[in-house]
Structure formats: structure tokens, C-alpha cells
Amino acid sequence: MIHQYGAHRARNGHGLREAFLDPGHPSLLAAGNACGTRAGYGGVQNGGVERILVSACLLGSRVRFDGGAKTSDDEVLAAWRAEGRLVPFCPEVEGGLPVPRPPAEIEGGAGGAAVLAGAARILTPAGADVTAAFLSGAQQALAVATSFGVRMAVLKEGSPSCGSLRIHDGTFRGRTTPGQGVTAALLEANGIRVFGEDRIGEAAGYLAGLTAAADRPRR
Ligand code: SF4
Image 1 (cartoon, rainbow, N blue to C red):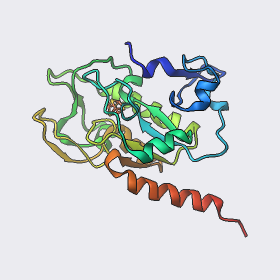
Image 2 (image 1 turned 180 degrees about the horizontal axis):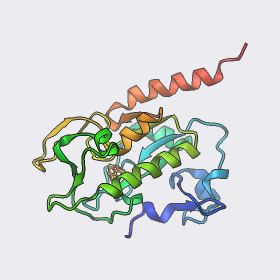
Image 3 (image 1 turned 180 degrees about the vertical axis):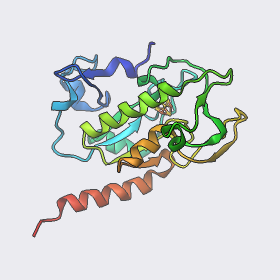
């Protein structure tokens, strides 16, 4: 599995978890860790800024099923990146799937919550069951988010992992249906607010609310 994203992995001091710090952030480059030699994210501090989990493909990593990226040119996302807020993550790659890989959809367009409950599978067009990899990726995404104190995420809309408002309907005919991907559903179930990349303005408002609440003096 060769991809830019994987080259920026970092392990914590105990080797138990893996972290994905934004390789575009100046502090990482200055620290000489662009090749994945950084000590673990468990000890990485960033001045207390609110971290945001982001789909790695939105930041230019070629981790999609077709070997491509979905690089966002959103200025707000770029500003957050410059501030060192972003924690890039690809649940499908971290779940063990290769790049490239066959497309996959949740059967019946049932949604991530049904997959988490064991009531629906995730299948390729040939009928291969890749549910376990998607579940593993979702659990790892939650673990990384929790380690960074993440309270919000911006994820790629429409993905069976990352979709927050819509997913494909399971027919592989390019049709979507309302619903969440597996990772988005697990993050939301654990109190992490998820926005699609087409709702960054909404996400910015949410971040402003989190920041204002954190800055408010306690009585
Ligand atoms: S949408 Fe999510 S799972 Fe799919 S390539 Fe992007 S980060 Fe990975």
C-alpha cells in the first residue's frame, strides 16, 4: 500500500496507537517529522487549539478507492490547516483496505448505525464483505479523535465511511440516499459533531461556538 498519507504516520511512545498529524502543518515540517518519525501524538500539544478530524482525501492524500484524492480548495479549511488544527484520517486505509480497492456500499443504503448494530453489511460489487475493515477503521478514527480531544470533524460527504448526510444506496448505480457512513455514525454517537466538506461554513460556526465557550470565564 503506497500512498502519501501512510508515509506520515506517527506512533506514540508506547506503540499502541497511530496518529495522523497534518503533514502540511509548518510545526511538523520544522520538527523534521514529515517521514513519520515523530514521537506519538499522545504527547503532541498545539497550544490548546481545538482540533478537527478531517478526511485525509480532502487534504490531498491519494487514499480513495480509485487511488485518487478529493482535495478541497476551501479557504476556511486551508486556514485551519495553517493553524495546526487538522488531524487527517482515512478510516478505510486504517481499517486495512488497500489503495486502490473496489468500491463498497452499505447494503440497502441502510446507514452506518445499522452497520454498527450488526444489522447491515458493506459489500463490493462482487459481493465481498468488507464490513470488518470499515468497523475497524471507524473504531480507530474514534480512538484518534478521542486522543486529540476532538469535538468536531469535517468528512467527505457520500462515503460509506465518512458520509454525514448521504451515502450511496447499495445498488452501485451512482444513486445516493439520506444516511451516514460508519465512521460518521460512530463519531456522532460519541458526541463528535460531523460536517460534510460542503458544509464548512456551518462547521466554522460550530467551531466558533466551541471556542467561545472555552474562552468564557468561569464564575
Ligand atoms: S472518504 Fe473517508 S474513507 Fe474514503 S478515502 Fe476519503 S478519508 Fe478515506
